[in-house]
Image 1 (tube, rainbow, N blue to C red):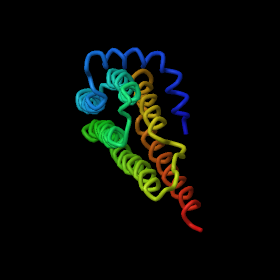
Image 2 (cartoon, helix red, strand yellow):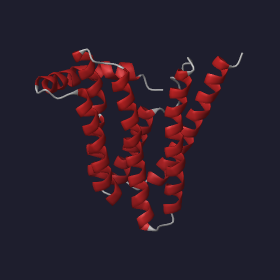
Image 3 (cartoon, rainbow, N blue to C red):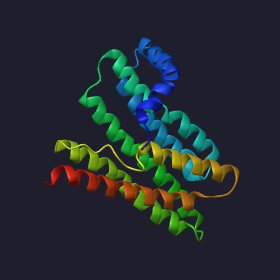
Length: 202
């Protein structure tokens, strides 16, 4: 739903110099993709799973920017292609799962009244997030387009980030955030199914 192309143009003046520096340092786009995924897993296990939402949210925001770096570097090097897109998309799913599972793990260990709600909503949100990605991949393999949805990855990450920050500074809202995430992700899957059906059913 967010205009990711416009967002990338807006931050290009910050991302481009870093990308050029990394290229001069002989760092490859693939290495950045792997590093971003590994960093997200480490942040999730070290901070989010322990309930340290403030530090986790700050680091989550910083390392999410790596999503922009690898693609920018590949374009500068002229190496953009199917492999990079495949690797980036695959590791994005790993990162998404790490964040949601880490937060579920924290609440599960709290054994509070909210634990079941968070875990249940988290499972639904994660499954629907994976289906959102799969629906687009399958649609494109059938020569259909599927770049729509109320809650694509950028929106989901923003929802989680805002939830973590509010929980750190004001009051715990992650149970409600996960319910919202589950609902919006489910709507997104339904939107994609209906959108692709219009293209493929004569």
